[in-house]
Length: 292
Length: 328
Image 1 (cartoon, helix red, strand yellow):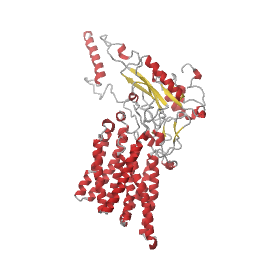
Image 2 (image 1 turned 30 degrees about the vertical axis):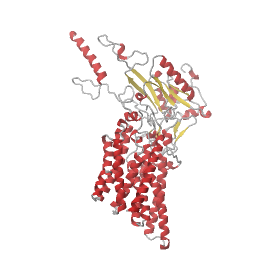
Image 3 (image 1 turned 60 degrees about the vertical axis):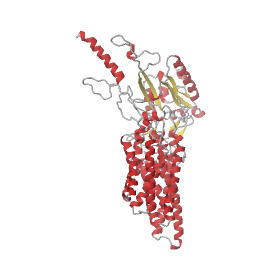
Image 4 (image 1 turned 45 degrees about the vertical axis):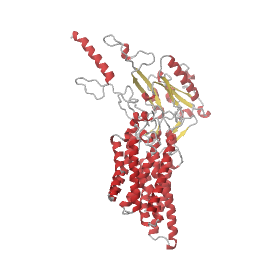
């Protein structure tokens, strides 16, 4: 918590890897100030290459989306809705005739990251065994094993992992957030959580964070944020995410799928169809040569 | 002028309301498409899932693997009915595909030099892993089968063991046919078990389509090589009929925004073109006894369709509305 100083779970040393404790990120946009320190810290610590500078024209977001060279991404969501009980934007001024029409506005920042799914599509899809589950429950791409087949890219229900294009360093391999596994092994906390000035990103034990998330939703709802909710799809086949979010409003506005599914649930019906097709071909060729 | 000021302020208020409710402000000298407050689905219209990074090698591989994978089945049947030359032609297709397919797959890798990492594990829940093993096993049967038959036809074996050699070749063919059927159909599962809406919504159609197109292609190539015989004619006819049914299925089983990439735009036309060229057109050509035309039409259609499905995946993966609609 803010005010805990070095005792905050974002700052203090830990032994989660050795103790095999499940850890997570809780990212809370209601206190995010959009400073992008997490993006910068992530890029610097992990030596993620510069992938070019593009003006998107989308609010103050010139990052766009998560990708092979963007592992934290601060979203700038503009909505014509009030933020809690705040009076914001043009409605606080009224128009020239002194009319206060219904013209609410809110600006929300949310730091997006790999969700480290309970049932991870990328991990299931990886044919080389490059993608593994770590001791702390995070999903890790081992760069030295990945041969760049690209199947994890289309298997992630959140569009997180991507193949790094030429001519960037280490191009051809798949990359995404490592949950700072290297730092965690040394008892350090992930770079993004460590630098977050408002503790909008909280790192810690997953069960602690989930309790904290539920408590935060209740607090916000009680103080006028009627549309505060947790984004942690435990009821779908993804089975919950280790980096979960508090959202104001619906998931779609944050580019998050409302009901993400791990693609392995499609295997049974698809392989059954493949079997039917194969048997059909066998019978067809057999009959064609036997009868004609 | 001071007395005009209130009117002007009213005008500004009107502009503001227009901008808010109509999204587009109309006025002299203003011609900004979609401006000034463009509203996009999701987060500024950004993709929710990632489109495939695969390039042209993958659809070509689907085509080659489909034809090569089903060819050993025809070779096996030909051996059983003692049509050695037909078996030879089919095994040439199988062997050529068995050599070309890994090359195409390796070319598409981000790190081609590390392709052997595909075989360091077997993961039955990953169609990419299963496929890599199927292709390896297919090649290990198809290429020896082709070599053994060629050696037999060049009299490399003593005449006394000739029948034994043919039986051995038949066993290799059976292995190649088994893994070949996997090769021709797993590619449909590969696309079907992903997060791309246009693909996973048609996960049962895809393996049937790819398998049927593969078998039809193998028969079509053999017909173009000169084997214009009744069994191949019937296989070609059946493949065209099934492709027609699959086209109708795809047209009926529409999911509105979720799979619109299959029906609209360039990717939609590629798929539709592919279905016409593999379905109704070859049926007409076969009924009018224009067999070479039927074969060419089917091959072209199967080729286009593979590109169409990859293109549709690219469009669908970039379309946030498709993802949201598929999860309604």
